[in-house]
Image 1 (cartoon, rainbow, N blue to C red):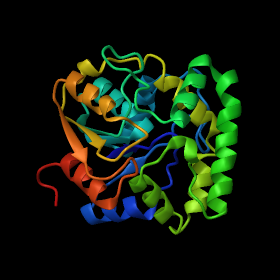
Image 2: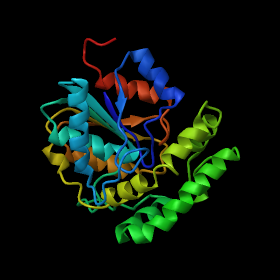
Image 3: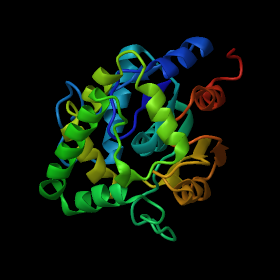
Length: 267
C-alpha cells in the first residue's frame, strides 16, 4: 500500500499506524511530497503531479499493482493515483478528504472552522499572502507540543474527539520530532499543498474507474461531511463510509480502512 499523509505531514509514522500495519502484515510505503522533509520543492505543483513520483517509487520497489490511501490533504493525492494509474492501483481509500475547490453544488468553505478558512483563503491569493501565516502556524505548533499542549489552536474549533486524540498523542514516543518534521521541516510542502488543493487538481474524480472508499468522520470539524458526500456522489464506483470518531483516525478506524484495501486472500 502507498500512503499519502495529510497537510502538513511527514513520512515518519506514529505508533498507532505502525501497530495496524504490523497487525495486518501490510507492505506500506509513505512518500514525502515535494517540499516536505528532504524532498526538493516543486513550485506550482498540482495534485495530479504526485502521480509521477508514485509511479517511480512503485517501479523502484517492483510493485506491479498496489492499493493507495490518503488522509485529509493526502486524500486528493490518492485519488489522483486512482485516476491516472488505473492499470496499477487496485483500490483507493480517500479519508476525511476535501473535495475539489469550486466543485459544482458544493459550498467549499461551509462548516469549516475559522483557521481552515483563513489558511485556504490566503492560499487562494498565492504564496506571498499565505507564507507568513504558515510559518507562524508551524512555529506555534512545535512550541505548543514542546510545552505539552496540542498543536492546533482554538481557531480550528476541534471537536472533543479530535482534542482527546491529539492530547493522547502527546505521550507517544517521537511525537515532538514528528511534529517538527511535519511543520518546520515541511513549510514549503505545506504551502504548496494548500495552493494545490485550492486550484484545479489536474484530473476529474469522475474519471476514476476502480473501487474507492470515501470515508467521512462523524465527529470531524476540519473537513465537513459535505466534501465526502460530494466525492462519493461524483466518483462512479465509490462508496461512502462513515467513521465513528473524528478527523484524527484511531486504530480501529485505520483497521477498517486498511482491511477494505487488502486483497481478498489477505489475513
